[in-house]
Length: 326
Picture 1: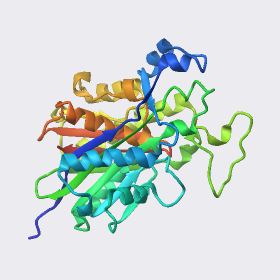
Picture 2: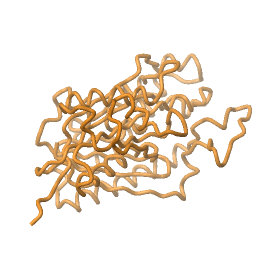
Picture 3: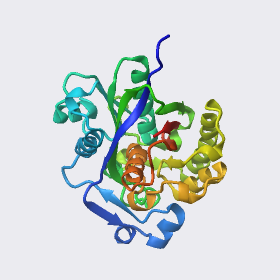
Picture 4: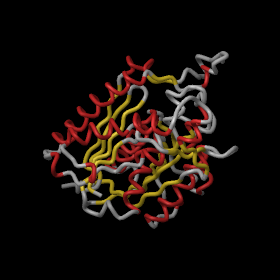
């Protein structure tokens, strides 16, 4: 009988740009205030990439830290999957650019674009590679420079997003690690959260810079996100025969504190068992979940053997979850 193979998180890493933009800083740009932003989103500040600092730069630094934590040499990687919606260039993929800097040339490397669910999607792909035997050591990254596509005159969106990257190294193991992942999408809701820039479609910027900005119907997105995350959480628990009270930590996408609190309430989890970084990072899209995971690991809150539920929701719509025995 063939022994079952699992993918285990061997190390985590993250990176944030040096520049910090507070709510008070934003109040000098648009009609807003720290109180207004914090009350509606829970965000107090976010990091912004420096001039010339790219998504691959952030991803590379997060990857190096994850590899160091895992005790893995980049040359031993069998796979690199990078979730992003803000690649350096259209091609080559940002994963290939990171691969070159790491010196891991030879293994497959590619990007996954699932907006804010990008890391969960990328983790799922890497997990399948390892479970199938096609890879034994994989680097999974979520990285974004979303501030590059913001309309800084639109207070409904510019206050929400930040830049950052997180990464994990997965290794094949006969002990359980990633127990299950679950992915979903609904392209019929694309217009509720999107960016109209594209090569095939083309774009013509207007006086409002509409061609390069995040466009979002906030209230509609909120309602769909809460419903979708409730559903995928229930699906995850049922698939693993678990009760919600068996979870040690919820590590959610850091988009909005109200959405995080709604999910925690559904799980009957006290906020003390929920990793929250949205106040310091804002919404870093694909970078959100791995950033929160790395902070939780390095702070000592997340310990080996604990049961973690990761979940995310993003444009597409896309949403997904991962249940992990850390």
